[in-house]
Image (cartoon, rainbow, N blue to C red; front, side):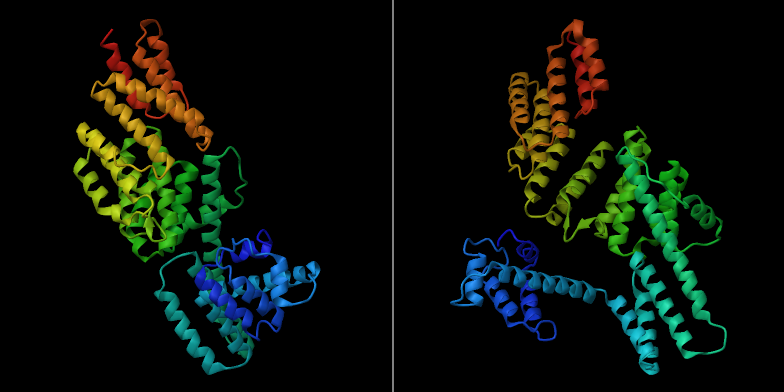
Length: 469
């Protein structure tokens, strides 16, 4: 029973959802079967993890039908019926969270029932609520829904006059289409840049031409148009306009929508930086900081330790040590408890390495608990670099050997990541051997090896080793 579809679904309920589901099943409006109520009561003993060995069909059947012989088919029917109730429950729960959609459906019913006063009052109230919400795709969708409801209401009234609601519905439909079309097209371009596949981008040229010819566009559509143009044409000009639009309108955009916009812009900058265009470093840093300050780049209630580390790296890349230190200490409290200490000490170690305060580097690395493989590998890399800068070559070589063994033996490390760090270890070892006959070959390998961690640092070591020949 523990591996059944029913239990797999119920495991996704938290404690509060489980209590609500029990009340849902006990409601005669949704369920008239006492047997399902008893099955739910039996399962409540094992909620919310449902991992106990006693959770079996046989024990459930005995609880529902005491004294009766076990009937596997009967239990199967009951479990299927309970799945149906659970599906209905999560559907209703989701619907209840869609407040504007629910009001649209109520308006449709008011209109159908010819409750004019009720309709007019709720319509005005819903319009006010819609205008007060931040911009996102859901707002565009509901604006169209509300316009369509108004148009259908006008038709039901059988008034022989000009219908302004029809034009509103058409305009809202156009805006919804343009926004969705741009969003899909942007994601297609984004995925094409990551994986070796091609999507068919139909009607995008027509949409782009039409929108570009308009003297004024709704802000959210304008922003997504310039995301699309930036990606489609690899255009710095369109990207500059995108940044201007983000700065002008971001405070009026919902957090989830804003997060997507920031991430597209950040990824665009990241690709440019990888191409050696360092002028995008302050731009992407500013995007990160804006998204962190307004919490649109938070994942639920916490700042991702990846985002936190990326910002520190950008500060360090620009040698802005004071700002990096302030950021590390200010935002460490926003990290999840599981990664907070490791992220704090790892990034402080990176900062002190850049400041050439190697005693502080060792102090912070010693406080890591390795909550993530990233910190294990990252800390070893920083420690190797620190030993080199301190001319502790014997300690460096010992660590290099143990780190290489760790990488080869650990099956939890993804193959691509493992290769990245093994290449680093092998090339550093070959560089430190400083064999005059193989020196140029090592240099070529550092330049062309993929994937490779710390390429620029390895090139620096290679140049320095050349002075000791």
